[in-house]
Length: 290
Length: 252
Image 1 (cartoon, chains in turn green, orange):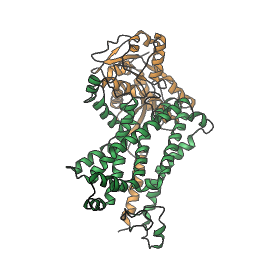
Image 2 (cartoon, rainbow over the protein chains, first blue to last red; image 1 turned 135 degrees about the horizontal axis):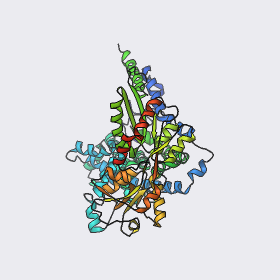
Image 3 (cartoon, one colour; image 1 turned 30 degrees about the horizontal axis):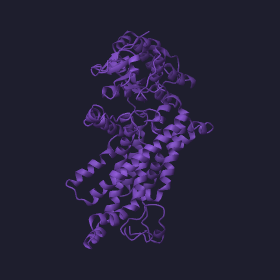
Image 4 (cartoon, rainbow over the protein chains, first blue to last red; image 1 turned 135 degrees about the vertical axis):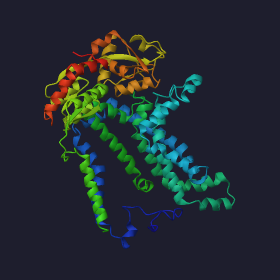
């Protein structure tokens, strides 16, 4: 895969070309034929990803849909979801951005172990993450008992707990995306800048951050989307109370008990919001997710 | 040879998908009776499963535990079931509306208790105590059976509850009490029995006015209807009644 001539900016000369779509420059090259047996599983895989959403669409009660998605409970949950996901995305950026830079450039001791630890929330079931947060910050938790005792601060059952749970599950996406972008870019520009006498802060703001920018959009979108869909860690750590901790996924889970039509309508609402978010940042997201 | 690798992969995939199905291709003479049961029946039905299999050699009892409304949805959407035991009558009504309920009968009732940590730090003794300042209370959401019962007892007692959280199921409520995050939670007496070491149940008079009926049935269209009927007989018979009583249920 040679660099596509259409790659924007000179700073990422070794960026691999996008695997599908937008491959205008590839059209004139001789492409290796794809082995045909790949098509079957590929189509089956695509079907497995796409058809369930079609099932949801088919099951929806379209007549009552407007009324169902604008109910008080739905709007309260949607508002809370958007607010908390935005807050946790900001927190991810504030903490995860520097973490990505440190992992990519800092050569900390035990880098491999550190990177595995950062990836842990990706492979943990979210409900385990929620329990872990509970036993750290809960009233009887490792740190939480002192928060309660000395500061009178209780984290569980608050909107803060929702944001922390979402940040816990979403931050690895941001860190991995940004770290990947930095590694792909290489550190020679930073080295050159340092050789020319730039101070560390100057190198960071004038070279490293611009290198991060192309990957930032996809990283932020991934983190936001993950935070928006968070369920398990939230229910285990934050509980479920309308307007305070009951985000849209929790509202869907609850409505499913009593009103399947309502749950389906809210699911479609969440699909629509997620689709808008992903489509808005699609080109970057496709690259960033590699 | 090279072309055979992807073909083998495809075959493996097809086989894997087939294995994910009902397993209907298995020619073994073993018969399976499929039971869908409310999560609160886990301990009791686990014991009855062993008993049934001991009495019926060659029969395998498969029990799927879950929230009653989830199970009802599964049956309505065509999941094969020989027995359906629900934690309330309204979920059985869901199945009945689809014309699949058969003849449900109530085989047990359950009622609420206030679950408190074993040392009861906030000295909870009645429903009214739950409304005191500084008590972190967790209950079920009104949409689920235990939450509906919670509303009923609160209304009967004239108490305005201000929960810190309305959980989607009763086990989540119990979990918050066990974890020490909540000072009290409203759960079923059977849940208190199941976690007797970590929590204590506080009885209150209003509980009797909000009992949950547990109906059981052999859904119409059950693949192994006769075995299903025999399992229902076991649950409703002497053995079943004893197991249910031991777990804290009341039997009619």
